[in-house]
Length: 176
Image 1 (spheres, rainbow, N blue to C red):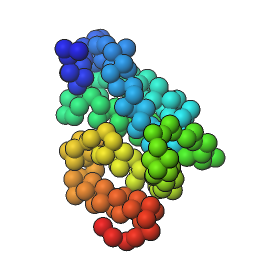
Image 2: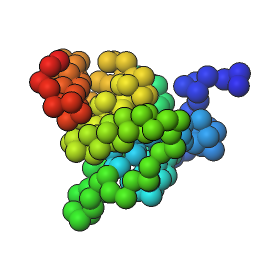
Image 3: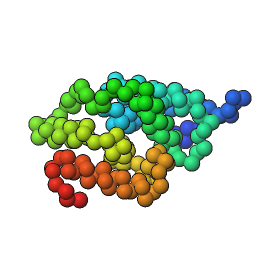
Image 4: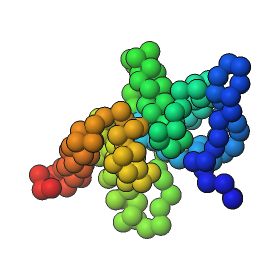
């Protein structure tokens, strides 16, 4: 691909800005955004719906994209808001249920993966999301501040606390 994913452009229309290539945006970001959605809700089917809802909301709200962050960071912020709306409307939803086991290379890796999945399932959504964004999606601190709409110091503290909680859940230690 000659075009970088974050160089998707907006075009001005009578009704405001809109993503120039919605299908291309979905193609470029779907898998990454799906991982974020899954980290938030912990359910494959809900994550798929949440990802699609996020793209629909993004295409409607393209005029709110100011270019201060990457397109993906903007999409993550929309995804988090969509998830919050969904959670308010569905109080009976229980995240991290019916998770299918992942394919593993070795039994030891499978056990470690299951232990990590189990620990993440026990964490609060906000802790799980910040860990996934930083460690799996390679978000910088600046991108986290934009996606989570938090000051830098708060992002660093929450990431530190989330790591500490995860470590405690995995090995039961308070070590940092």
